[in-house]
Image 1 (cartoon, rainbow, N blue to C red):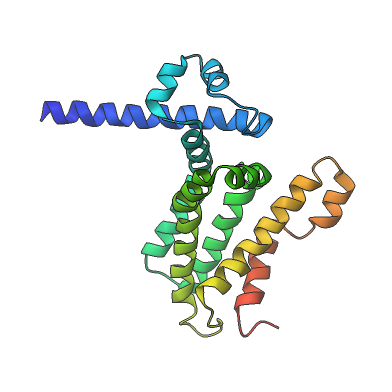
Image 2: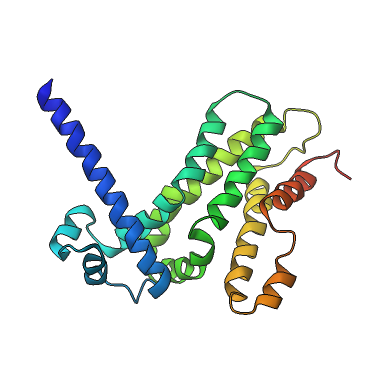
Amino acid sequence: MPGTAKKDMSSLKGSARRREIALIALELFTSQGYAGTSMADVARKIGTTKGALYHHFATKEELFVSALAMDTSEPLEAIERLAAQPGDPAERWRAALGHAHDAVFKGAMGHMLPVLAQTGNQIPTVARDYHQQVISRFRAGLRRIYSDAERTPGYRTLNAQDIDQIVFGPLLANALTQSLMANAGELQHANLRHTDRTSFIEMIERLTRSDAM
């Protein structure tokens, strides 16, 4: 029906505009921090009014979480597709590990971790919303993929919490180290060697495979 088509097109335009706003806001949150970025700053950067901005995002907290969630949407959706599709379990697990690494180091998540942690501590709704929109989805996808892998020869039987710690522990530690050493190049090199995508996948394989020596 023409009316339905018009509504669908309007919804698509609205989603695209929300994404555009969120990713521009992310640039400001990255450079100025959460506390140092106001909705007026975002509106000015976009070239719109605060009123128009609030039409898309009711609060700065919502905008902040949405910006971070959209920044990781590609690797997250890739993991969820892997979780839903058939295929070689070991290959799917290795692919998922690569996407998890991408989520932290290819976008803003890695160097935004200190800001996210501080903001979530001060504003619990940010912590809850980020957990719901990002963390819980990553965990669910990886757990489902590993549950298939551990039914094949060579993989350890692990509980959900073990999987979370094995995968995300090194990623978060490396991201925080990267932020800490950002202005000390020689220390960053010394502390972050062998943390690239391929090395990360190989390390997690050694930790999750019972036949790895």
